[in-house]
Amino acid sequence: MSTPAAIAIAACFLWLGMVLAISFVEAPLKFRAPGVTLPIGLGIGRLVFRALNTIEAVWAVVIVIAVVVGTWDGPAVAICTGVAIAALAVQLVAVRPALTRRSDAVLAGHEGPRSHAHLVYVALEVVKVAALIWLGVVLLA
Image (cartoon, rainbow, N blue to C red; front, side, top):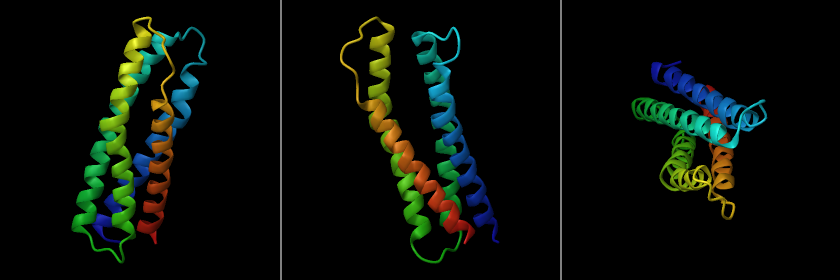
């Protein structure tokens, strides 16, 4: 196995593990913990997802460098990488600002209508997870 392949595999599965652990385990469970109010949960969520998204961007750059430097058979590696990075980009550019506006309103006491941005974010997480699993399998093949 080449060094770029080993680096891409490691970054891919670290990224995947972080998304699974935070988005699908930590995020839903934090609001079930005793004493965690909505404002506290939103504050924790903002901090955790800001950190996650920053680290995800680092893994994306590492994978892109490994893909550019490495030699790959067929377009699957580039496609999987592109899908995962596109999902992250949409989350960061389009969905996170909407979620921030919504959480700002909730924290200010203005409930208003529920936002669908959270569902869009979760759907993009599912796309990202699928792309990262596919990428990891292709890289290991």
